[in-house]
Length: 328
Image (tube, rainbow, N blue to C red; front, side, top):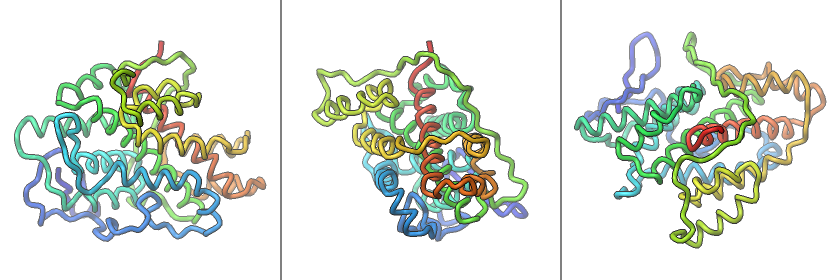
């Protein structure tokens, strides 16, 4: 996959083609790969805010390392390479328009060897990229055909669980970073005139059923059985757990984020509704103009952050539901 720079644009363009001239490929900000905090990307936040959010920040940081190891063996059941994972992350970061995230994943991706130049490899990567972009920015277009195409290009059930967790997680990370940048008064989108499609998910309260294979109890590992028992007891994860449990380590960390954001203080106000709506639809446009009215109402900053973080987490879960099943 190739990141090209166009003169006059000042940014790269992410293509679904393999590239073998790695020395000619430069990310926009090479140093963006070198961060101590791979989730918040070294944002200079007040210590008291970081401490107040540590309950959900700790598993979120751990997920960065679980989802994006810089070297990972592949086999017949787990075919996603480090390149596949980071390429997907960059695609979602671009769809969300949060430039700090784009710089980071582009910088991590650039030095990695891409897939071979065979038609099959290019088709596989193109399909993964298209699917990631659609689920991230236009989840309402994901249907049985889109899901079946992942199977047709050779992704296993384990791959499909991981790739959808990556898509959901990066969308979550983008929105959290946007919230913290708004707290600091930083712009989220640095590319003038770069239009981002609004993110939409129709509201629905219909019953949901999984379409992907669930973990079979007779073949489940001890870790899978433990995770299944624990997370099916959580209403927000109850229906998703039998599918997510194919990768129980990822499920456990996802569940920890849920537990540490569900105690957010309820608040109903026009300012909160407007902030959540913009963060959900266009995280690239979220700024202090949406965050400051919440604290002006007397809401402590850490509580405002937790409320917005929970809305971002709900978007993650909604995309998993789109990816793994359907409404009846």
